[in-house]
Length: 103
Image 1 (cartoon, rainbow, N blue to C red):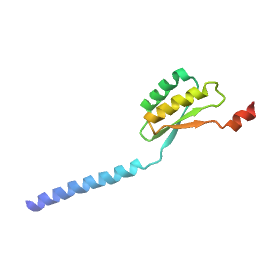
Image 2 (tube, helix red, strand yellow; image 1 turned 90 degrees about the vertical axis):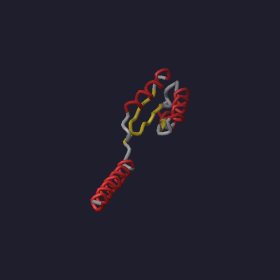
Image 3 (cartoon, rainbow, N blue to C red; image 1 turned 45 degrees about the vertical axis):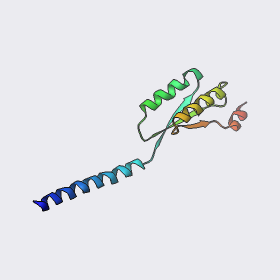
Image 4 (cartoon, rainbow, N blue to C red; image 1 turned 60 degrees about the horizontal axis):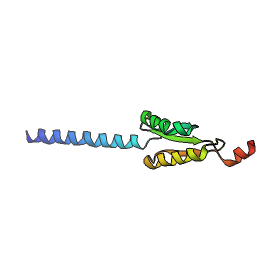
């Protein structure tokens, strides 16, 4: 009877260790990017929060702000404030070279 109890405990321990090993491998998987272009400063915070609500755990949210938008400083400020509350957000802006070349 004691041998059966030891065997059951070992099987339970082995199952837990296998589950921990498999869970650790899935956390280190690749993250896929989700791009969100911010255009309107009045809707930006709502759009980001609703996008964060629907993201899967392995998704990475990229906020794209165009330097050609006349409201881009305000959008950048909003994005930075949102990034402070959720550090997994990445902010991407167009380079000024591209915007100067098109002027």
